[in-house]
Length: 312
Image (cartoon, rainbow, N blue to C red; front, side):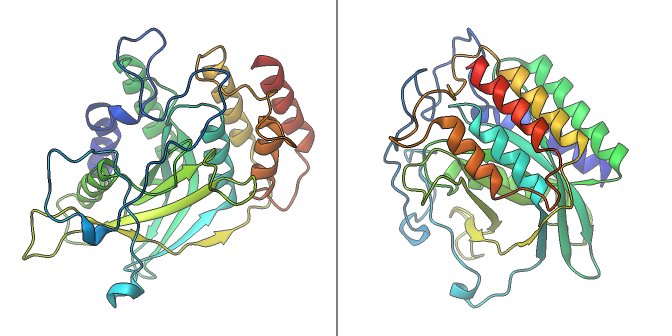
């Protein structure tokens, strides 16, 4: 599957540029989910629609329209694969999503066991690149591909954020996910799943301070309606708490902090998120729900938090 994995990694530059935050000083208009520095992120009222209301594809429809996911039980089908996800994956994804007011993107590494039909997601690989910076994007994707090889992992999916909207896929997300599923499938006849994760760190409708992280997978439209959109399906996952935070997770966190340092869309963590909590408080509470069993590296995390507080 190596050729297919390289294609998917390379495909983000060409097909998924809208996910990347604007480059510093770039002339492109800001994404709808980008907020001026110093202003609290608020819900922009991207009201989700039900899939059954979409009908056939319409070029006039806003590609950022959010769509409610459908459960497999609701259509009398079984989920075609099982998923187990590492707490460290969700930890790093959540941290990445909290850093910026712009959308972020990254990849998921893991393993697919065809016998047990189990997809195990073991590692998140954040993309530290900006829209308009094709050279950095290409370098980043090559670095991720080499990291996958080094760890003996396969590319099993991707993630991105909706900073202040619900963790539901947009029409654009659905099309991108469908394309990724086909790319990972390649020319083989065997089934190879591809998982998408959406993170909503600052949506005001989230209960409590924790981010909402939602998986989805796309079912092709019915054969008799080939011009319809793919169907976004909710995916059940088993959560596996890691024993400890690995050094490479801490290293990735520091690289992300350095990447967003001084950026206009960097979240100002010392400012108030609510009457009771700062943005840093919110980040800590959200990450606490995804901590490993052994929290021996808490002192290192406190150093990271201190840097965030000073640097924003």
